[in-house]
Image 1 (cartoon, helix red, strand yellow):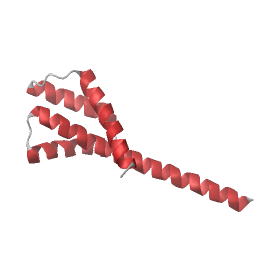
Image 2 (cartoon, rainbow, N blue to C red; image 1 turned 135 degrees about the vertical axis):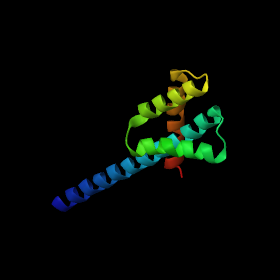
Image 3 (cartoon, rainbow, N blue to C red; image 1 turned 90 degrees about the vertical axis):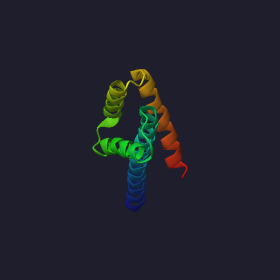
Length: 107
């Protein structure tokens, strides 16, 4: 009985670890996608756009949460005269999170 319980406990631990890994990867992908979206609106091209997106991925790795990404983009948009509201940016972040999660889980 103890062995079955230990195996079940281990299976739950493995699933939890797997889910955390998928969540981490989905957030990183979301930040990259959001970065490319924002870069396009900022008029950044090719290498600049990808560097900008990677900066946002870096914010995720530092575990700053989506609010920091939101504030960064809002600030960058404001400095460059891009007309997007805080709500529009937030909505895009959440929409791209759903897309990134779908991509990661169905890869």
